[in-house]
Image (tube, rainbow, N blue to C red; front, side, top):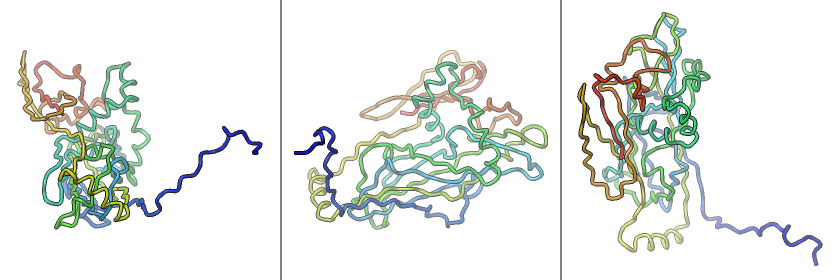
Length: 326
């Protein structure tokens, strides 16, 4: 008889299956070397191939991108300092394809979707309810102002495409094809005028738009691979493929643009979409030609490219773009 009360005993240890292996793997872009840098006016696409590991699955929740973002100072202005919008929205498009070429996801204006989703973050939304201002706050990036122009800032970016925002493991071994990989992920860089602005200048006033430049280096994709024994995987496969298909639930996003003429009093907006299980529609108003018509001189924290949900900044004679993600 033990002197220790039974309710103080710890739970018994459960012996796990040692043959299940979990490995963290770092992938490099297939269109670059280990020392390559990416910029909007140079190599502006990052292409990743996820290998079709046999008897393996990847965890979407443990898949993310990491990179170093550096702002480029113009010649003759070593005092220039820059900042990026919240979340460093350096991508404006993402496309995901299988090894056979089937397009699973293709999202334009990815940076706007990134901003919209961040607006609905519980912590962010609770703060802006007091002011109604959904723009980023300038003080958030003050700490990075000097680092951006020196060695750059290391950031982590979670992939917002539906395939990587769900909880189910992806059986990459079942997507193997002649190409040797399961998925191809292509990310296109964003126009600097849409994701960054200048904070300070030693030459007096912000520079022209052509001096807004940034580059990415040390770009990696981190994935977690779970490998099962072949005997266990065969049993799973027989169950998964009993219906002659593998169903992976996911949420996807599509962008629809509608242009509103100047001085319009009423506009009918039509969205044509064949979605069977529509969950939500997120809508944003932007000035037409926001990148090309961006003023050279702007007030820090009130830039043209931050006008999301800012009706007070839009004049009645502005031509607008209404963009909806569904």
